[in-house]
Length: 343
Ligand SMILES: [Mg+2]
Image 1 (cartoon, rainbow, N blue to C red):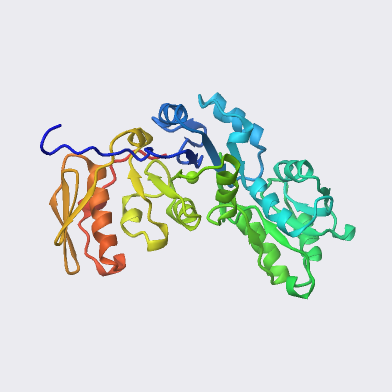
Image 2 (cartoon, rainbow, N blue to C red):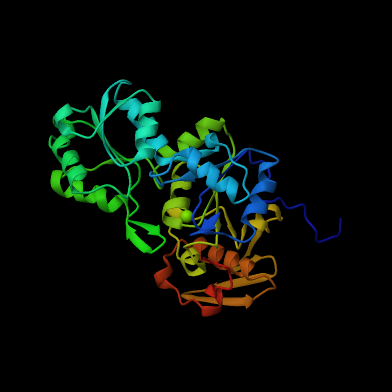
């Protein structure tokens, strides 16, 4: 071992469960993301790997077959869906066997019936709770049934309302469409109540995944700071932000305390590479061969280094380390240059 070499660990060292988001991490629309399949297959040889999805319209087995087609051998129990997390929440509030009003599709009905609940579509059946998740078939009539069932506030004896997730939008092959959050909001407007949320960025979906595998050192991989990384952090799980999806280097630099990843990678190959240490000396922060200096409101690049990802890591560590908000800084454009592959 040379004088300057250190034994550095990879983001996967000591991890006993890898949890991955899907869109922006594994695939983008119809296509796989470069290096995702090989890197995840390699990770899975050493420890369990599971996928977390907020999308409530597909069953776990459907997601598992899709992933298997992409080259990621996946069993249904290796997919954790927001309907499963929603049913986990429901079990704490409403006894099995109760009648539940469903606003949503097959993914939700399947999980409810599997857990021993009876499904209704009518508020007249005096349901014990309302469960709401996205399905392309949800229309005014279903939303109205939910509103009728939820007319009474919960603290006045009203029934629980659980939403699988509150993503405002959902990407479709023809563009961006209203997501479950938009539909939940329509019911909220009618009843003035707030739903309990099961999916990211709330904890229940992470808790469901960790409990299912009995994990002690899970690692979550996502592409969005405000849902994936914030959710993992809230659940006490270390996280990797991968720059192959929604969020870009400029978002990383600006990330608030509540949504800062443990690791930042350009693509998933870096899961298996030693992760460089962040070294802070005075006002200079160094990662690999990239160094950044903070001087009052100015962020200076001291050395750009030979790996763009290390410059992002150094810039983020330097800015985050000040405890000050991004708005107070003058940041050179080179620091948030974006040579990384995205959808
Ligand atoms: Mg995603």
